[in-house]
Each structure stands twice: as C-alpha cells, then as structure tokens.
Length: 311
Image (cartoon, rainbow, N blue to C red; front, side, top):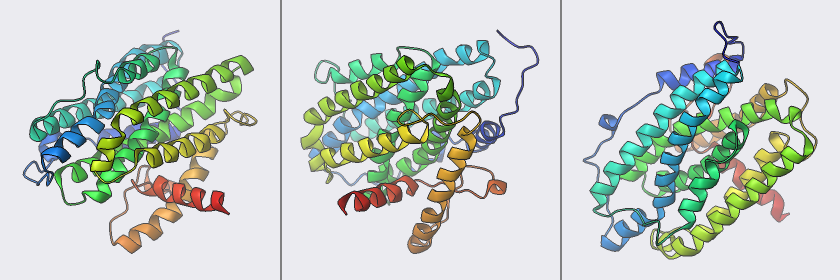
C-alpha cells in the first residue's frame, strides 16, 4: 500500500539516487560540431545497428514510468526515488540519439524490416517490476558493450564522446538492477525464478535474430556482432550468479554486500586501466564507499573471463 511517511533506509539506492540527480546532463553538453567521419555506407550502417538500442532507450523510459507506481504501492520507496533519475537518463539518451540520426541523415531500421525489435520491446513490457528490472539489466549489458565499442573506436568523434556520457548513466542503472534483484531473489519461489531464466533465454534469442540481420552493418563499422553478443551472454551469466538467480539465492540483506564486492573488484581493474590510459576515473558511488566504476570496468572483467575460459 502507498505510505505517507515511507522508509528511505536503503543507503546504496539513496547514494545512486543522489549520484543520478547530480550527474544530469543535456544535449547542450554534447559537442555537436565534432566530426562523424563516416562515409555514406558507414553512416547508414551506424543508423542501422543503433536501431535496437534506440528503441531500447524508449522502451526503458516507458517501462520505468509503468513500474514507478508498482514500487510505490509495494512500499519500495527508495527504489521509487532512484527510478525518477532513471527515467530522466533514458529520456536524455532518446533525445541525443534522435539528434544523432538527423546528423547522420538516416532513419532507424523499420519494424517491418526488423520485427525482432518489436518482439523485444513487447517482452520488456510484460510482467511486474521484477521482470522489468531483470529485462533492463540484460538490455543494459547489451547497450554497455555497444557503447563501449564506439567510445574506444571513435574516441575523438561525435558518437564516441556521446557514448562515454551514456555509459556513465548505464553504470548506475546496472548497479540499481544488481542490488534490487539480489534483494528480492531470496523471496521468489522456484517457479518464479525459472520464469526469469526463460525470459533471459527469450531475450538473448531475440538478440541473435537481430544480429543475423545487422551483422553485415557491424562489420562495416569494424566490429563483430557475434563476438559482442558472446560477451553479452558472458556478462548475463555473471550477473545471474551475482544476484542469486543461478545457483543458491543470496541470504537476505546480501544484495548490498554482493554489489559492493563486485564494484570493489572492478575498481582495482579500473584504476590500473585508467592509469595506463592516463584518463580520470569516473565514480558511480560516493567516495566514502571506496568503490569506483567507469565505462571500461566491465570490459576489463569480460577480458579476464575470456582468458580464464580459454585455460
């Protein structure tokens, strides 16, 4: 039921809420004079591969608006507060990507040409707030790898700079989903958890369908859609274990500890990578947590996972 005087005791979500509120930026902060440096075929390829991400930003914005009253009625007021910044993030991403399309001179792929996008959109809109958080985590992991690719490959170009800004927002979204899902997973019956696994498999299968259509465009831009999807699947498996979906569920109250341990592990990798690149480190949480997240953290993790798997 709706609470007049709610409990706002979840410190990690409150920090994410404050961080999200302070970290807002607008399209005016983008250097729109930066070059695109793509020929006509490259511009078309970027417009095409960006299409699922573009629709995903809109799906996330609409889905969050639908979940917000669910959180309020469930008495999850701290998560409700955080979600207000999430909606602002997604609205901003939607706006800047719309302006990017105008700059490229191309429109997104139509639903008729790529119906898997609409299937993905509808799947994200089904279920309750737990389904939504799990779907958003999977989608954000895909978006993370996509934006990371361009933040490195087009570092001094328009979309590269835009991608770096969006990645900082995405790191907060992943932190929220990790923490929220780890906190609710111990309370879910086995059949409910199995439904989440089926949802994961369905979303990843739809991603494969989209990759089959957009693979040639990815190659034009210099990356492999198959490799990116494999990295996404690795990350999804890691997060499924982290939140307790695969394997034994975490004990009650362990969500914060699990998230902080993961962030601390990433922080060591990030500091080393940032020193090598001579770039400032971006923090997603308050300094007193002694944890740091930047857009390349999960990429470092993914490389370690791949090396370990090869042994």
